[in-house]
Amino acid sequence: AGAVVSIQNGLCELEIAAAVGPGRTVGAFVNFGADVLEPGVIHWGGRGAVVVG
Image (cartoon, rainbow, N blue to C red; front, side):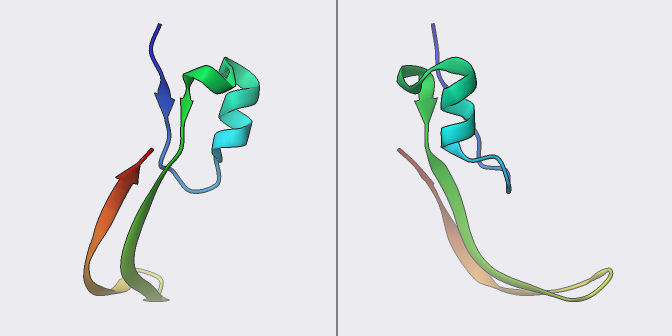
């Protein structure tokens, strides 16, 4: 038993549900302000949120 929660970019909850079942999948996302200005240079825009469920 248990659940899979993935908050990595590019792996959505529908793909996880197809592998482990929808009853064992929880959607989540991370929301924060940041921009990649150039390789190795990131502008951080402030705090964000991690939302599960």
